Image 1 (tube, rainbow, N blue to C red):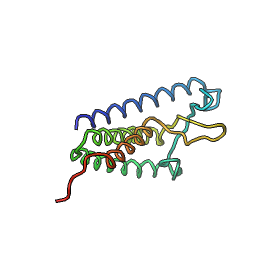
Image 2: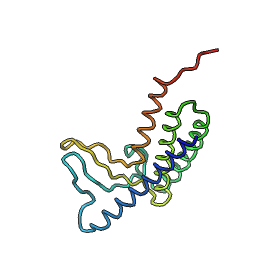
Image 3: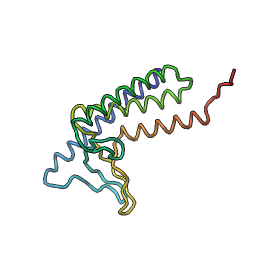
Image 4: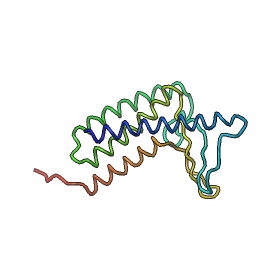
Length: 158
């Protein structure tokens, strides 16, 4: 379980450090809008997502913070149990990425009432939803779980 737990801790720390940095970056620019163009395809933006993925249910901040925090906590507990039973290192790593990402976003909900999203990739005027390192880790972790499920070792039925 060490690999998965180490990944979870590293993701949660990196996520929180990146959010502290971006909050300070925008706080130092109080007279400017909450976005900063970086390249032709990437901007830094400052958004607070009170809902869940892709801004769904982005209303009633207090209720959402409570509901999503309780739900994420239950999911993290279930994922830790799953990690203990995982048969491959890839699965442990993947679960650690998901757990770390969930914890990073829960910390935001508890302390800020919303998840800080700031990575804005775009193609011309078409912008993907803003996200953060925790969201990226969750997506990569889920992708690794899919790869492990499709390509990993299979148990023979008894």
